[in-house]
Figure 1 (tube, rainbow, N blue to C red):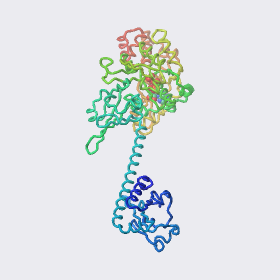
Figure 2 (cartoon, helix red, strand yellow; figure 1 turned 135 degrees about the vertical axis):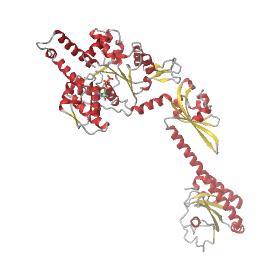
Figure 3 (cartoon, rainbow, N blue to C red; figure 1 turned 180 degrees about the horizontal axis):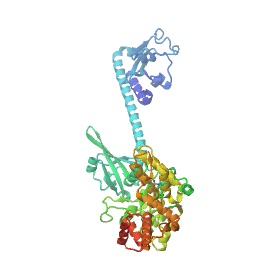
Figure 4 (spheres, rainbow, N blue to C red; figure 1 turned 60 degrees about the vertical axis):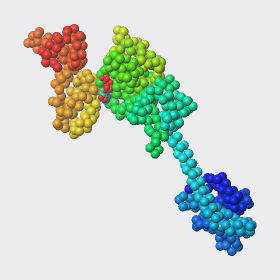
Length: 600
Ligand SMILES: Nc1ncnc2c1ncn2[C@@H]1O[C@H](COP(=O)(O)OP(=O)(O)OP(=O)(O)O)[C@@H](O)[C@H]1O
């Protein structure tokens, strides 16, 4: 609601102007009957509350001008509490109406002498017109003031809003000179308040192509300002009034931060916790207890265990139980990336760092993992030439990208995992002992499935429910026999292998109960081999009878030996080469024998 109080000084100026022209005293009151402005006798009463029932109240209500004379007989005066002390001979009141047709005050002309009275009444018509114009002026003035206040408030709100944004905001005029910016922009550009003011945006982003940016609206641009050499993602928005460009708004964010945010969004789906790790065996419970205990610390962890035992699962659960859980978990498998690329994967590179490098550069895993956890899987496969470099990053907490010279500070917790015998590798000079000690601060051993046979039915049944649901099948159960076979099986691939066979069985079974006849052949032979391992001597002799020839005995033994190795090491060419090396035969001989004994 408009209030003349808000423009008290200009209301007083209007009162003085009226008095100067008409030589009568003036009082201006607002809608609450408060005297906002006055001249002459009433000047010292500015701010007083007029009594209820006074004549101005009627004028406010009726929204019509009125003149009051002969207070002794005027109906307007008869209830006024100031009637006896009032020295006014006559009063003219003119309502001030705002643009919503609401009364917001009254201008009163007061005659204390007969002369003033006569002057007013002889010029009544022109005085009414004059007061009408002044009342319009006051209402306009008030609306203008309110508008300014409104704009100031909006301006303040917008400034607070842009200062609370996570992105930097820069506003330029139509000539691209910087006129406004938020705190985040100063922080991202690493500069002080005065440094940005009024300079052209092309000085901040030297290779910015504004025409292209305005048409594409978003670009990835180097910042050479303050020698900080960061890359930014910039969005530009044009502000137009009446089809004329008046200013531009640039939203800037660090390219590396955008990548990290994107990484985090993708990773946040993987919210693995310790209760995702199945197992009731004492061995598993002890491992989980240890992992929980060290999760909150920042010390390096090395997780040891066979393939598929859940080393990555543990690493994720540790991260999600650490103080870093809201920051990235970045995993990289050192054995799955060619040696030549691993360094750039870890350290990242500047554009044009080497031939074949992307011309936009690349953020490495160290940078991505900043404030979070870096998980280096298969650390035993980290090439020897990268080992001192990793050690340096761990010691200094900083590194430079390939082809770059800017030192980047990072703070990540390192978790490594391996299935290899690092101690032997150190003996053979394949792994640096200084790095080993740095990584192996907290060793965690994840037991193989063979060492916790009681967990096998728990995991098998849990995964069975999971796959039935995932593959949209009716609920199924395992027969007792199949669970027995599972418990005897060698499980070279541990939980991953168990998971795979459950998925396979859910896919192929049509019955509610899954029975052992659906198992692939190697399960039957393999479970026997496991038994053979437990009672090797007894079983080794079991295929012998009184009529077995030496040749047959040797063949039987050879077959069992090859089956055992294939089951233990795997069926890939690489694994077969390994088996051939152990047996000290060449690969083609091994193939010939496998073919002979029907082993695949
Ligand atoms: N205790 C467990 N409970 C539930 N699922 C498990 C468990 N251990 C492993 N898994 C599952 O087995 C699969 C393999 O786990 P993971 O990748 O963590 O093993 P890993 O030891 O890191 O394997 P690798 O050495 O081959 O990288 C995953 O699908 C994982 O969810």
